[in-house]
Length: 382
Image (cartoon, rainbow, N blue to C red; front, side, top):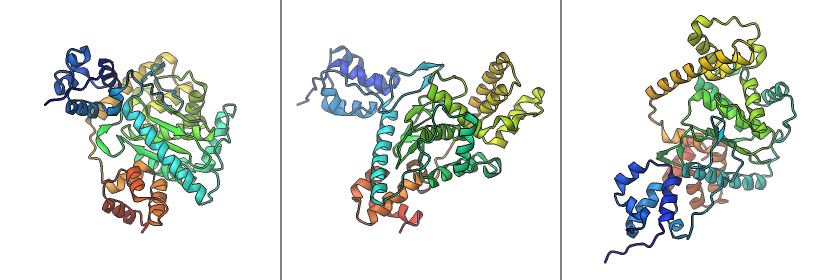
């Protein structure tokens, strides 16, 4: 006998909207969805389970009398065109929760190993001078022009390694956990920082371009320096209203492209595309960041800046649409997704019997111990 579930229509509507999936695509998979939402039909248990999976909603939530509140667990400074974003997606929520679990584990591990607090956390404030703040960050991260390598990949890798070497857990991924079918949307968020004295953590959305990831990482590092957790989607189009975001943006821009480095530069505006590309490759930032820094240095009027900005942004979008990635080798990308510092510590703790294999597999997204052992070999922990 077929059993129909008495789920409230409000909960089905909530799950659909929460998923941020197109209604027509869900109707293709669930033709009776409109009737379910109107209350004229009910789904079977199997249909409800499939719908929960498709919308990434915990199935237990469907039996609540009203939709639950799901506030972001950290301050939300994201904007689109200077307008706040109201509803976080399941992808974003699950990514933050996973990072919080990893951070909590690493904090306990660091305490057990009697590690010292990360010395620079909280050493700057919003009243700190932007240029001086960038200099102090350079003293720790050692990311001068001659240390950024020849490519954006090399620069990003160097910056991540320096941050991790100095105690920051840097997690960089373009998917939710290890699910390659759930890609993160850089328009929703570009990164976030979880400030902590022992286990400061930064997550960077890996679906973004490499230059954008570099800027995001420095922006989130500025958050760590002032000990302020937050989620951001910082870009060059919007000017943050929030004083914290505005300060972190200014410091990141000064850190990557110091105003003094552009002083006296002879800009050829008749060949602006090549000029922007040349400067972007030199500083290892996006051409949009270069545009902004040139505007800050009075090379353009505000009207000229926005005209150039929108043209360049469209050019970048076309280039991104043409780019395809094969995802790379799993054993090479996992320490990037989960932080090499975190991954090595977790494997070491597990092999020493301090952490259960069950917990280690869950935090790393593994299903088999053989995968865990292979990773231990790759990182030379065994």
